[in-house]
Image (cartoon, rainbow, N blue to C red):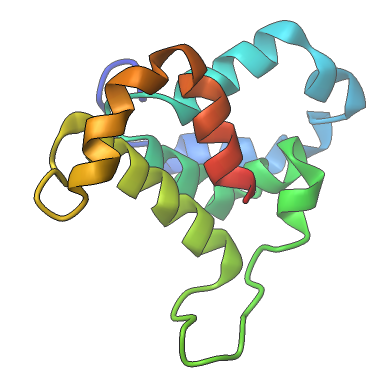
Length: 131
């Protein structure tokens, strides 16, 4: 879906949900699976939407067990408007927005720093997802 800029088909999401049992320790350690996940995470097309769909299907929590522990977790204070998982996914969207230059007026310093972070781009996205 990401590669071609398409939305997930509902049948594909159903199949994905039914196949979650296939996501095991071996798959989590698989080099190609990790490369594909990093490609989705750092995609300049719509990583936020794709991560949200993966989360809704249960895949994100299966791939990253610690992420699975925070799905639908609420923070009870006036500063927290989203569940922890939604906050993390939205943060990826904001990071992508800053990188594209869409948030230059709102985040000028962050935008100006992004070109210098090209070598650590994947690490930055992983850090934001797991912060």
